Length: 108
Picture 1 (tube, helix red, strand yellow):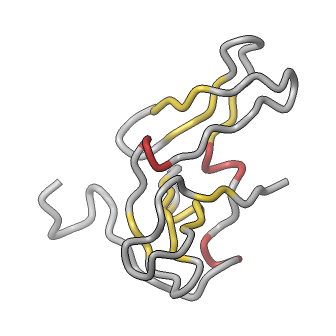
Picture 2 (cartoon, one colour):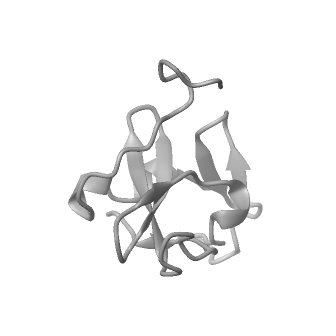
């Protein structure tokens, strides 16, 4: 089941909530403005804390690599890749392109 995960920061474009969504294959997520759909990158501080489904302990936010974040429970060890628990952008928003690390022409 996919969840509606809202960023801890408002969108810079409209000052509205920003929803965390699957952005591209490989675990890349973005935060998209719920008002206009504009996409922005996500950093760890913009991800909300989430309780463990199993034991209700607040999960820790960790990063696998440059683009893949996951929640891990410090009590029971359960973990969820954020990519796996949020909807694909196309299920919620109209297209709004966002370049990813490794795309041609980008310096990173």
